[in-house]
Amino acid sequence: MLTEQQVSYARQSRIHPVIPYLEKYRQSFSELNARLDGLKDDDDAHKRNILPGEYLLPFADEIEGLGFDLRAFDIISIWQVALQLLPTHAFPRYDLATCLSLVYCTLPIQSERWEYLFRKISSAKHADYLEALKDDKRNVNIFRTRLRRIGFETGEISDFVYSTSFDEIKRLIRVKHKDKEASKTLDEIEIEEQRRKNLFPKLDEIMENWSNGFDILHTYFD
Image (tube, rainbow, N blue to C red; front, side, top):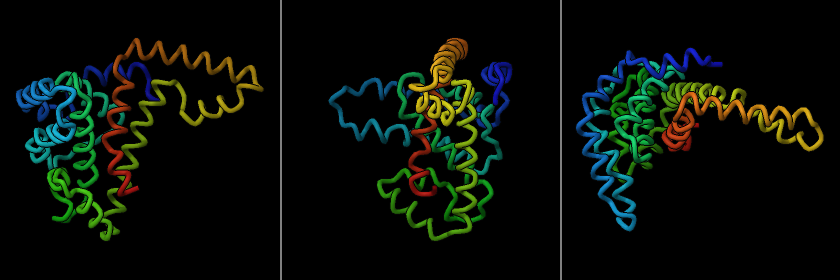
């Protein structure tokens, strides 16, 4: 499990290779924020959904083939910057998580069909394109293995925030009505969770952003 020292260092670190590219598109992300801010509640929800992808396309194209890892430490580092550049609206961060997942998962795949996947699935017919890829079983397995690795790493962040695993929390909830120790442990977990959230703000937002960001990928590849 991550330690507080590791999380603290990750939040300050700016050495991940993706971060300079995020900084390069700071002005573009600022324009995206302004456009999203300008949308009213009754505006077309479709526009709110598609704008982030359009603004992320140049960034996605530029990091295509960039060698990088997505360990829990890396995700925390990247998201400290992402939360600064995209502070108000969640949809752009969902799309950013999708983008990074796609680039990372396709890095070992040597096939034109899998190149620039974020651009290819940003069209209205993205579901058709993803569905068509499923016949490439060898590369689907490569993609799926790396996608599950991301899931494991975001799970590490979750385990840190809650000081234990979701499985253990669910087990304790199941038995708390007949086990006073389980009920006491749940109270202690809740206190520790709040302490960690106060000490490291926005960590739970990372989990939510990435969960939504690669949900679509799990739909097709897991």
